[in-house]
Length: 309
Image (spheres, helix red, strand yellow):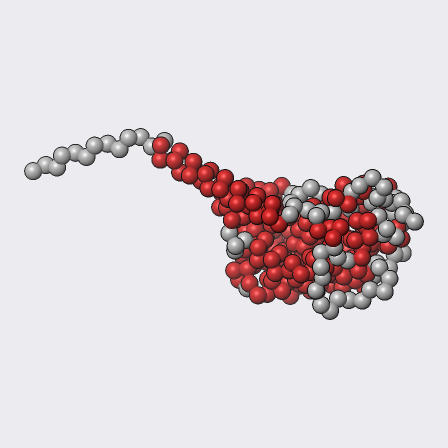
């Protein structure tokens, strides 16, 4: 029997990018836009190094059952309650410590400090709003949620600020990707249609581009460690999904196939490649136009004076 979702639980969008993140994207200018054509972008490197895990998230019983409407409402509620009572407070606390650390190490105007300040505030406001009206004081954290928060805390305490940014990235970009993939699951008769429709419409690439200056610094410092940190965070997301489904054990391998019902949920690969080519061509014309405008706005070159003999 399909269970109806509680109205309280139909929206689960994670905190969105704030003004500073968008300002970073604007400040990057044309170079940041052109990064979509580059194989060295943080999207290509980090996400490209964890596609096996993202596929397993898509194939997880939680996501598949939500897509076809058979997910037990108790499992959905358990996921949401753990998110509100464990993950959000824990992650918010870690972000506050990162802001305080960055403030001490780099001062109030550094990109690191501004990023952690705004991200912490977004998490705090979102978490308090979602938990309002719920009695969560006696809810115990699950092992998966505890492990996720511990991972974030350990990264914040023992690694660079750059690695801490990477550790938080999957919480945003994975949900962006899932929202696109799950669009076709939002059909009449699916108890989770309203919840799926409420997922953020931000594209994964937009979040990556907005965070790119900070992510690129981490990649330049230590690419191998950055890839490892991102994969670990993606695994934590996968384990969080699996933890609410009885009988599932921690993943030891990531050889999953995209479920047929979700394979068509997003933009097809061929279409995505075509869009990327068109985007790059369009940006190329923009760049040429800017260069042409710059040269055309210059006054005529004065004639050379005849040298005195």
